[in-house]
Amino acid sequence: MAKFEVSAVFTASRYLGEIEAATEEEAEEKALEMFEEQLYASLCHQCAGEFDGSPEFLEFVVDGGAD
Ligand SMILES: [Zn+2]
Image 1 (cartoon, rainbow, N blue to C red):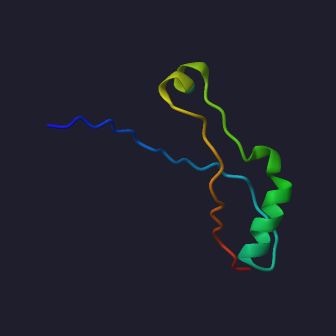
Image 2: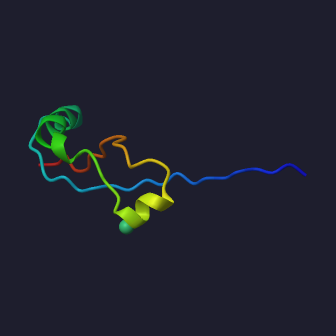
């Protein structure tokens, strides 16, 4: 039998706020500018010891769009 090392990759999201824009794409562009400093996350010392690496920004999730 072979041995395998198995890791799990987690995702989590952070609510940034509301943005007024014409389209979803424009909302993402504005979000990049407005929330640039919040596109990172850090773990506390205890959690950092359990995770390999720190959380990295992956993508925006944009909901809504109706007036
Ligand atoms: Zn922690």
